[in-house]
Image (cartoon, rainbow over all chains, first blue to last red):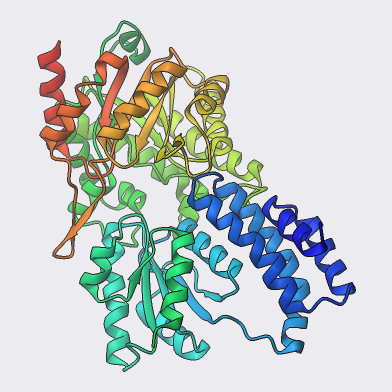
Length: 212
Length: 295
C-alpha cells in the first residue's frame, strides 16, 4: 500500500499519531500537499462519512477520525498556502440563538472540513446578525444553521430575512439542519436547502457552492 | 407509600408523567432560558406542571432537573446554584403532585463529550453527577431516573453516582435509541444488549428507553429490552417528531394514538410507562384510561 492509501486507512481508524507520521512521510517523499490532502485525508474522511451515513459506524468513530484528520491538516496547512492550493470554499456554521445544542452542528463541521471546506464555526446561541456579519467578513458563500429545539427554529427564518434585507440573498446561500428541521420547513422559510445529516450536508453544500 | 420496586416487582404497572420541557414552554419558558432556573424563579409554574400530571392520573412525577448538573447549568452561569436549584425542584414537584404520588429525580446528560471522543475528563462528569444527585437525594426522592443517555460511559457514571449518593433509592436508567437498518443503536453506537448489561452492572434497578421518534418504534425497543433483561422496564416515548405549522411545533401523536400503541407495553412487562417530549397531561390521562381498562 502506498503512503496515501495508508494515510486514508489510518484516518478511517482514527489513529491520529499514525496520520501525523504518514502525513510527514508523504511530505518528505515530495508529494504535493494538495495530493496528500485529496488522496489521503479527504479520501479517508469520505469513507468515514459514507459509512456513518450507512450506520456502519457511529459518532465516536467519526470524532476519532476527525481528530486524526486535524492532526494531518495542521502539517499540511502552511504547505497548502505556500503552494496556493485553493480551498473548496468557506462555510459559516452555528447553532441558532436560544439553542445550546451543538453535537449535530459539530458533526456537520467535521464532515465539511473532512471534505476540504473551510469552516467558520460560530458555536452555539448565535444571533442572526452574527451569521450575516461573519459571512460578509469571511467571504463565505454558504451559511449553515442548526437547531435542536422547536422553539429556536424561527430564528432560522430571521437569518434568511436578514440576508434579503442586506441584499445578500442569492450570493450567500442558507442551508438548515437539526432534528426537528425538515425540507418542508426549509422551503417554508425560504432557505436554499436542508441537510438531513452531516454527510448529506456536504453534498448539499457542494451543490450550493456550484449554483450560480 | 409502598416502595416503587415492590409494586413493579409484583407486576403492577405505574404511570409516570409526560414532558416537562414542552410544558414549561407552553407556560412561557422562552428559547434560550434555563428551564431549571424556573425552580427558583417561578416554582409555582414548575409545581403546576406536576399538579396537572397528578390530576391526569400519574403515579410518578419527574423533577425539573434534567439539565441540573453543574456542567449543564454552567452554560447559563448557574453552576454555583446547583444545590438550590435541585432542592427547589424536588419541593416544587412534591407540592404540585400532592400526597400519594411518587417524586422521581430526573438526571439528564451533561451535554459534554467525554474523552477520548471529546475534551471532558470522565472524572469531571462523575463529580458533576455526584454533586447534582447529592442535592436531589438530600431533598428526598422516591426514585432516580437517569435519562436520555446516548453515551454508555456517561450513563454508567450517572448510575454509579446515584447509587453512591442515595443507596436506599431505586435507580432507573434509560437511553435514547435510533432506528437504523441494522437495529436499534444510540447515536454513540450503543446497542440494547450492551446498554442493559453495563447499566445493570453499574447498579440500575430499572432499565429502559426514553425520547426517540415516537411510541411505535418504542414498543419495538421495549420488546428488545425485554429479551435482553428480566429487570423491570421504564418507557417514556416522544409524541412523534414535531412538525412546524404556522411557525409553531405540532406533535403528531395524539393522546389516543399514543395510548393505543402503548397498550402493547404492559404485556411486554413494562412496569413504568410515561411520556417524553411533546406528551402533555392529556396523553397521561389517556394512558390512565388505557391502564385502568386493562386491569
